Length: 228
Image (tube, rainbow, N blue to C red; front, side, top):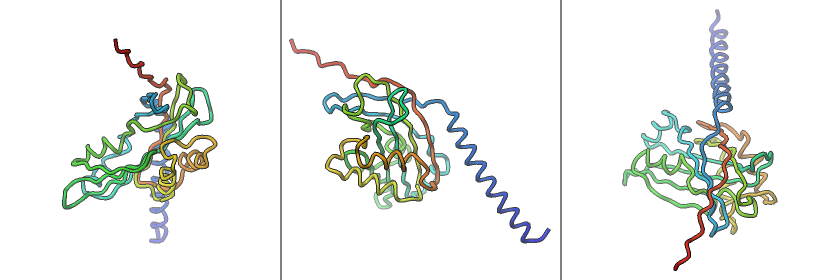
């Protein structure tokens, strides 16, 4: 066996293993049961909000990088559907840029979501995950997009350190609008961006997770009690 032949075999074998791992991950995600989710209405804002966890996107390798203070970005994008529908009614997104501040020994978190960007700090990796590997009270639709009482589900994608900067540019463009407190919905110029770009393969990432949530009816808070 020549050295050139051996090298070719080694490269081909490595490519096969990478492809096999990718296929296995996609198959595992496709076979995974719908994920728990919570939708709730904020009647004062005429909007529905979502809470969902995706901590499983952070594997041991990503956790070690966070522990060593390496910069990390986690991008969550999702399309919201009514039960039985094939076209989404709205879209939403959340990104977290995580950096280690050496002097203060804390993780600095820059979170971007509909409504703008805000900064916070966490002392531990678990603190980072509570903020960046979950979506909590993330706007998922407005009353114009989602009728109250309609059952909803979500198709979502999470990327850790996406190679393409396109995602972050698009999200920052979205939230910088004067109407940045709303979601991108049909008729919005950015709606096709979400459904056509964010929810399809846009390039490599260190880790990627796709999932569908359970179908649930958003919780409506009880009306305030009248004062006697």
